[in-house]
Image 1 (spheres, rainbow, N blue to C red):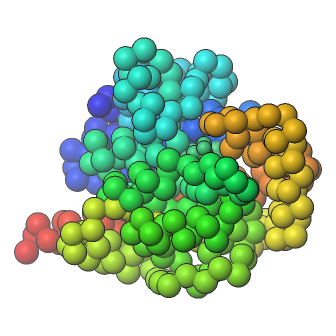
Image 2: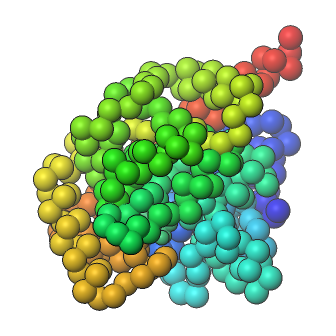
Length: 304
Ligand code: PSU
Ligand code: MN
């Protein structure tokens, strides 16, 4: 896997590295917000003392970190395909530009040996039959990475998504919350079975998860910052309208999620974007802290 010089150096010194997905930049947020998202997430990881690594397929090359001209191409979004785990090999073989979803990024993390990954919201079970279920869930079940997010996207069936995570053996840990956050909103009323309050506690739980032979991910969820979070009712209303618009337009497959996110942005007069940017930054900061806690524990173990 190709790594930028900064990421190469971080690996060489055994430092903390946090993976960031690229689909949120190339298919999720629209310009100019995607540029702001990339900058704020990277700065937040760095402020925590860790090194950010945007994962992508760059002209067919699996890459950790984007060089400036590559980042520009991804932010411009032209000719960049959405790459889930199953699409990685084809994107490589076709020498394509591919932006990795949560599922694609998890696979890249496993290949690269990265244990911590920050994103906005994972994919999950979509509302209404026939049920479209994101490949994110099955990849979470079989890839050992801590994924920090604000829950699953509000456009999904959240109770069903939580049930599937349980079936798939993916622990969902609330960071200083007992409730699954609603991505744009703080509350969903869906209670979690585990709450932890510090990055060190999460690092401990992760090592125990691995020591018990669990081969899947651990999802760490935290609500969006309260000052920018949207009221649940506003999110619900915009989501229902966006879903109706998607079905009227006959949107299918991988195009569904980007369509809904763009539609909700319009319907909330951009308030959803403000929340989205803030929660991405917030999640990147926590992921950085967790990665540092894991790196410190590795050094301590090596020293004794
Ligand atoms: N959350 C966002 N914006 C996004 C996504 C999630 O706020 O763009 C992306 C992630 O990359 C996630 C993907 O993995 O949407 C899920 O797509 P699908 O439902 O097609 O699996
Ligand atoms: Mn899907």
